[in-house]
Image (tube, rainbow, N blue to C red):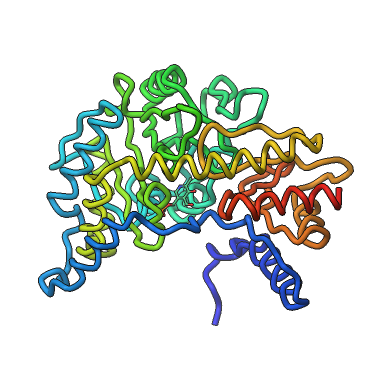
Length: 386
Ligand SMILES: Cc1ncc(COP(=O)(O)O)c(C=O)c1O
């Protein structure tokens, strides 16, 4: 049995090797703290679980669901976008439900990329951006995200002929893995660039609601002209701790949304209706719960970042996201080397930055997915071993 060429060299060797090492250490009876996963450790809001369980008991909810998503759900998304971002969306043509934003981010390329077409992809970046492009036969032009440029892509560094040929640009703020944020001025620059070069902008806002110290991330669609050039991928996974439910949305340019809907309707059906009901409850219920969640993450961030800074580590305090992007310390040269050492010596699992692209190799990513007490333990262990 021979696997297709497109899968060769695409195994997530780094993740499986880190996981193998974690199991080896755990089998020795060690207490391992796992900060590698980006999956929330806390439960969803009780009103969401109630909506889900009562919808599960309704036998009318077991038929195929429409790809587009229930009307009530699309209306709830439109209402939320207006209230939260001051962005008007037409629920009939500018909103499509997704089986998690990953579904849309994986399939969008099939609607627009012909073999050999260029996609502008952030490096480091969430892996599906590259993998989806690759599956569609596209070519990746990496946009380096470096600290000196606040982890924003330098548009002037993209060669004119690549920009002219590129079909899609992917952006993600607040960012995974580096936790950087973007402002409206940056989005305005992106709109200008996308208009000039006829590029579709795909902005991923998976972490828009996990923001701290009064900071409130903007929607890309909130700047003039954005809807003419792009779409935004919104997720309930992190905002409401619903990662396993698989629910997200793509909103914005109706032509882009229509093309993606065509691809999706040939591949699958809509999201299981009880999950859509849970999404409606999440979006229309009190958002006080989300603010409390963000403040829980902020306290965790403070324990970890303040603790590391006190030990002399140079690490930025994130304004948003659920991640800390920690520079690889001397004498280590590469992220894998440091991540493995951290696991062996301190019993802490992190993701080597190279897993997100070559530009990530001088960092490791720590996810704030355990309690303050456990994060204090991480600081103590690092203090003891480095
Ligand atoms: C930046 C980013 N985008 C998208 C996703 C996928 O989220 P979803 O659960 O909505 O598919 C994740 C998940 O970790 C992510 O970190």
